[in-house]
Length: 484
Image (cartoon, rainbow, N blue to C red; front, side):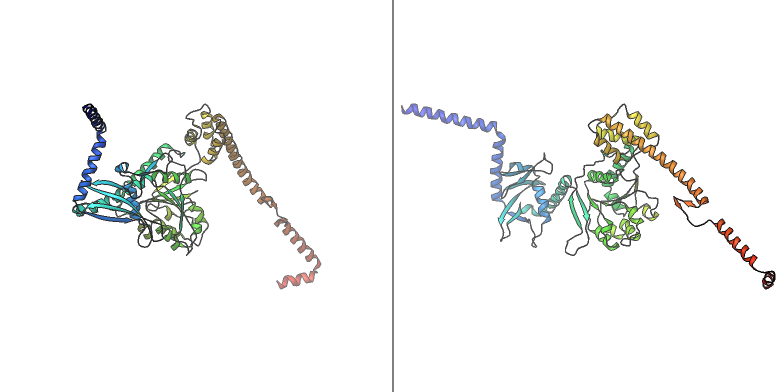
């Protein structure tokens, strides 16, 4: 009886061992992972390590910028998935998932063949909440060889990640206030325009894209020439032609922040320079409607201040990789000193909508690449009628449920605009004719002059002289002649 029990017990042990071996063979990656952890544990006990702390706050309780870079780098490591506890968060886009190391957890990294680890330590502060610190553990024998290159590697990788995921912001200048630190206030820049949605000639759009891409890659070239790494654009054309939307599209294309300079809030030339100094790299600095501001002859910011803002000494000292954009309705009345090369590198004209721009808008707004009404629309454009892209866009949005109705509404609006232009030309011609006839009759611009004409004054003066001469006697008349 005892032998039978021992026999079945032995069989059970064999089955369990076989099952464990099968499990290990089936999950050999898990076995390898466990063995690696044991080996690393033994290795860590043999070597002497050195520890480097990266606190979240510095000694002045201000944010430690390097802590942010380390956090970005650590959370991007592939070994994050091997951590025992990892937090999952929604990214900046709704379909993005971001992995973040949990409190007091460790993740491993490898650089130049050397293994090190990062620990996210969280402790209680002195009445100031939690103290968060990243602790780098590295073998003492490897410290001199790889520490500096590794820290530089962290800078580079984190900058690339932040550039890829950074949120573009819109900055606006405020009135000067001693109680406010800094003159710029920011909000997320969520403008939907892109270069693909801008209604612009395709060749011109491709040239702009090529110019922007070339600028992004030209840092060494600009520095070799001894020039500031910046680019200046002038966008000019009537209101409603898409200049502001184009600036937004440039910001999206470059992933640059936008600094919108409101000159009416600038106190003087020095204040304008200070605003420029407070801008950051990788930004677009915009001054809209510069022609209107210059026409107002404002004493706050002079022409000299604008010129120095564009390419003065301060401009060369406020950082690299900046794009300056100026918008105008027309550049005819602008001082040539503003428009010279070096201050303005690229001039882009935004005309009223033509047929090519209309087709681009029809594709974007209505999903139409072609339509039976397109020839009629083209004929109306060729007759000289036109509208701004903003006006045509509003018509398409209002009639987006029926593309045919939208096109008919555009045709009607274009024809009305063409008739209005023709009537305006006739009115101007009639006005000039009536003005010339009014000068002859003493009537000008609907205002009738109530004073007598010059001829009537001369007749009245002649009659008065004739009556006075009849009252004078002959002797008196002769005396008068002799006296003369």
